[in-house]
Image (cartoon, rainbow, N blue to C red):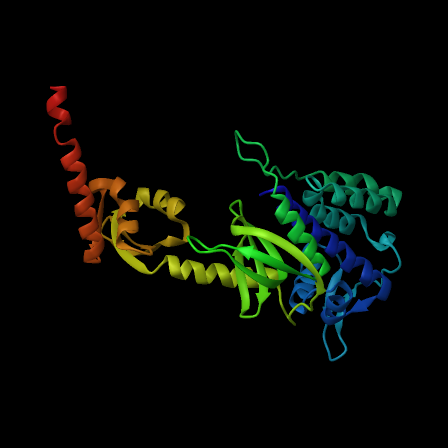
Length: 329
């Protein structure tokens, strides 16, 4: 996870605190009121309220036509309405983002000072209980490109952007988009934006230029970034899983295959002392390349196209290395 991923996480943590303070000021709110006040979707507001409740904060939904969400006990005005357990739950929720986001850390310090003195020690301990280290072993933490930071500003300000963008092997094109949100997936950044042709996803490393136009836009009603991204991932995985091969392998090795292929490997049954799995990929060759290294320890039952690719790879390897053993002798 990169530093801007932490920033985005900190933004959510900051929003959760804002929701709590809003409830303390009003006593009872609806998800629609929270959404309007914080300029987020109703679905996001509802998830934030549920997150506070799950974390142990005394936030509960009230049934009925005029229900909404309420702080139990009528805690109002400031953070002194929280109990020690509730304060600890809040800081456990927000603390990890602060470990790598300076603004969130400053906000936490202010929140700690707002707590009753008897709660501060446990709240500080809770905030420091988890540290997020975004760097992989042997690497330094990667900083997001400056372009990502500039696009993040346009997302927050709801400002249109003129993009020069090139697809894979295509001529650069120019378009004006409404930036809705940024996603960091496996160190590749994506911009989700609204265009003249509807919602589109752009890889940031293919954006040649991004110039704010100074024009504002209205975020689509009901848009939620996490939901939109989940739908994009689902569509992409369907494309990546255009072909399925049925494979038999020893049970003790199944976890290795699943760890390597993730959602592209599924256990579907057993056959004697072996497990039947399904491996998916866009083409027969791509499946064969994943399976070839297992040699004779696996058996591909179907389709014939994958069997043919494995046979071809085997012949190529045999031709290249057929004389190696004789040379050693």
